[in-house]
Structures are given as structure tokens and as C-alpha cells.
Image (tube, rainbow, N blue to C red; front, side, top):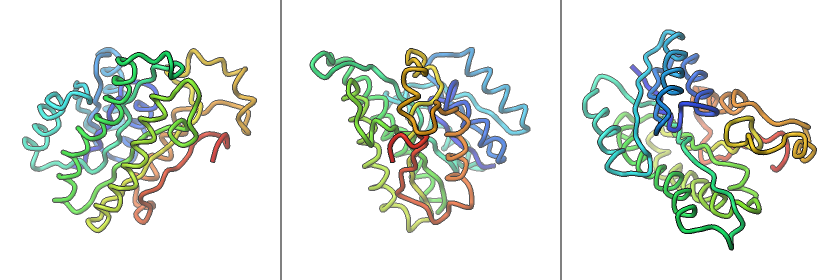
Length: 242
């Protein structure tokens, strides 16, 4: 009974990842923070693929909340294992650095960086005992290139990229791979306010990407064919920045 835990999974890229991993036969733990309606829809779609789908509502930035759900699930399900962890939860609060208020700085960092730590520390310990596992962190073009108006977001994703490379070296000898996927402009709720007509000219492929195209790369990293790939950042950006 192998499960994949996907954070921020009720909509967008997270939802697409859940469905693609379900196609691979993984049972899915769907983490979300607030949108019960969308989480239930994702759960129904996953179950329709013939696998188990567990809703797990918690805020990744709150350590006690994560402990109460992830650690408890692991302790209560000794006959099951989290074979794949996808750290996808994240938010944007864009502004020029001089106008970023402390709440917007800390909230972005708390969800992306602290969220990575809070969830991964439980799951990687579980994987070490099993001597296998896949950890996949959803980062961003912003974490590689840096984007004006996104100093907080770029800093948070850059931190997770560095953590990905460090953790990969720590756990590789136990059969655990740790990689990151860096989307560019993808059609999701997070890019709704961006006019595709204005920005697609920047992209060599002349279009925004689809969530399913990110999910396809995640599926590769979660599968057998990527067993010797670790510590890498794979961009899904239409050639915008490599």
C-alpha cells in the first residue's frame, strides 16, 4: 500500500499531480488548507481511478498542525508507506522589495520554506527506515532566475532548491532521491492575473504551460526510470530560462 503525499493538492498543479500519480497506481494523500469543495472534487477524481484518496487538511507552515496529521498518519498506518512526497504548497504575495510588508515576507517564507521542513522531516525519516522513496519539490523559475517584484517568492523557492541539493546528498545512499521541478508560466489560479497575450512572447514556445505538463515531469521523477536522478532541478518553462 504505497501512498503519495501531495501538499497544496486541491487545485492547479497539485491537483494535476495527484491525478497523474494515481494513474501510476499510487494511493494519494491530498493535503490542502481551506478549500473543502475543491479538495472533495480532487478526491472524487482520484478515487475514480481505482486507488485510495485520503483528505488531510492542515497548514504546512504550522509545525504542530503538521505533526498532528502527518506523524499521526504514519504511526497509525504501519501497513502502509509514503513512497512519494511532493512539496507543492506555496503562495505568492508580489510587490517591489521596498513595499513588501513583514506579513507578506514571512507568510511566503513560512509556507514554502518552513512547510518544506515541517512535512519532509517526518516523511524522510519514514523513507529512511524503508530504504526507498521519492521527494519532489515544486519550485519555480523565480527561484532560479529571480523575478522583479518577487523577492520574497524568489528567496523562498531558491531556499528550497538549495535544500533539495543538500538533502539529496544526505539520503542518496538509502535509495531515496530528492529532486525539484521548476515551472515557468503555467495556467493556474496563481497566474490568472497575468495576461498571457502580453507575456507569452517572452517564451520561446509562445504559450503558457498546462498543469498536466508539470505533472508529467513529476511522474517521471516518481517512477522507476528516474532511479539514478537526484539533486536535480528540472525546468518546465517552454525554454524561457534554462
